[in-house]
Image 1 (cartoon, rainbow, N blue to C red):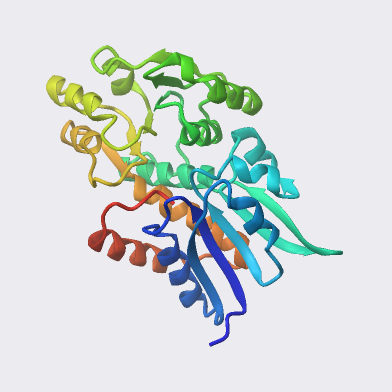
Image 2: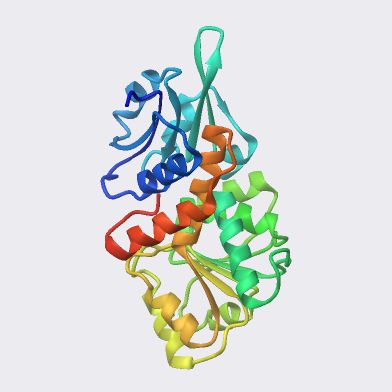
Length: 297
């Protein structure tokens, strides 16, 4: 079958990305014959040439690390949310008078909000529950999307716990663009337990294993958390933090839920069709059962 429209995930490394499985499942369920989605290993140095090569045979790109910042300077338009967050994870290809126009956007925020709302439902609060207090672990790129997501859920003054305050300048700038006012503190696994226990929402954006000391502190003290934990890491799955939180009686949302829902929004934007969430969810579940060492893209 001839390829009529193309899309791809770009990143480095990207060979084990689950995005092709998610998007291909969506194309199949929607009956989009001739649509193809692949993974292209792309460095920051390779990115400009690849972006320049895009034509109307392309529907769009998913963009993961280390390209989310670099791609912002290579597109024609960046939507306000992506500007505020400081990261683009989706590039849409559209027609222009001469060639194509490229628009950068961010679906990570949608993925975070939707995943957290699933947690609210599991907790019995309802998907529309507001968030009055929140804690974010980590200060990297995903933390910026998390601040935007928490703002949508009603919390504009979360606590951000990081290992080094000296590395938060980028996140503080993003927070100022969003109009949110986080409180930055040094993460101390034991001293921070009270904040974690009492928050409506806790989102860990820390890399794999980096939150293990927090997990150990929760397990040692056994204090029942009151809120929903979303750990964006899912390899290993479950993480030590998720296990400790669940064992203490808290509600956990796995990072794969964010992965699913950010892809759902990408499919909608790239195809113009409502994404088949159930079909994509089934494909994701099968892949997670059979795969390890996969990135969150």
